Amino acid sequence: MTMEHHDRLLAGLRVIDAGHVLAGPFVGTLLADLGAEVIKLELPELAQQGSKAGSALRAVEYRNKKSVTLNLRQPEGQELARKLVSVADAWVENYSPGTMEKWGLGFDDLAKSNPRIIMVRVSGYGQTGPYRDRTSYDRIGQAVGGMLYVTGEPDRPPAHPGYMLGDYITGTFGALSILSAVYHRDHMACNEPQLVDLSLYESVFRYSGQLAPEYSQTGYVRERAGTVRTWSIPGDQFQSRDGKWVLILALSPNLWKRLAKAMEQPELVSDPRFADPEARLEHVEELHGIIREWVANRDAAEVYRILSEWRVPFGPINSIADIFDDPHYRAREDLVTVEDPLIGKTTMPAVYPRLSHASGRVYHPAPVPGQHNREVYRDLLGLSEAECDRLHAAGTI
Image (cartoon, rainbow, N blue to C red; front, side, top):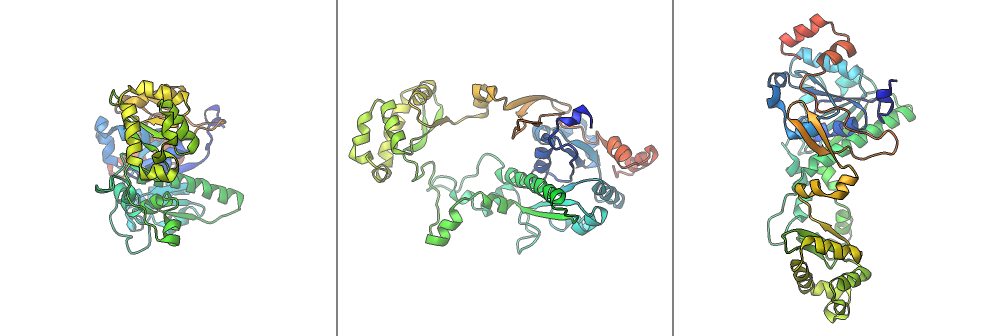
């Protein structure tokens, strides 16, 4: 093993990324960031687009991967895919259910090529069930999984979070699934193929915490409550004099006392309206109004300084510009700058999670489409130079 690979946590793990935006590719991104060899399949026509194929999303989610072009709709392309499967640990796809079977690349087909293959399938509703064939996207997964119903103001329509959480959550479960399946294969002497059937809505639903047990026991349905939570009062977001938003949570009696002292209004603690959690809930608007006025009379920096001194939990509501300027982000090296071959120098989230030994990093930027065709098809699969040229001319690769 070369020194280059010695520090890669997942060195030796080979994953074929046959996914497209975004849940499927994110499975591979997480593994590639930790040193796995992830081979990304891309459409042959992308190689002709040059810099037009580049995007900010591609730069971060295709980093650390190898790229080969492959037309899975052609019989020869399908045969090449099965050859890739024969030398891989896992195959990830997020096409509509039935598509892989139509191309001769279903689970049974892959298992014939590699009886120990791990196949991760991502779709809106899973490979079974009455909704199997419905078209879905990230936001729909959040809707069906229950997240949107509880997000937003009570008198307004459900609000969509600003991130593609459904896709990213599902991709995270996909990476966990592959590592679990590899462990089972290697430590439990499992010589059978493993199928992982993931859906956007189930991934979102798994993050719902106590909603299901609460409903099953009491019939309680959580509704949208805006930024206020009954179990954490005072707790809301407040705007400073210089226009910054800050989230303040003083959800225990001790923290409430600290906040009152920080605001130089210790008498609020003994005020009958705010003396216990029930009273604070009943008078939440008045209480938050007092805090809102205190914050509004100060610039954000002063608010942060005072709350820090009194150890009151708070958090700036950061824009991406705030994040770039944040000294804590800087100290923990949460941002990394990469020279992307298609869009140039760009800054993106650093590899996460970080492990103390053989931690991942951005080993190389996102590749140009087809950059690793010769390395994979000739060196790994053993195709001749003439055969590679023929397949390229035929539009297969």
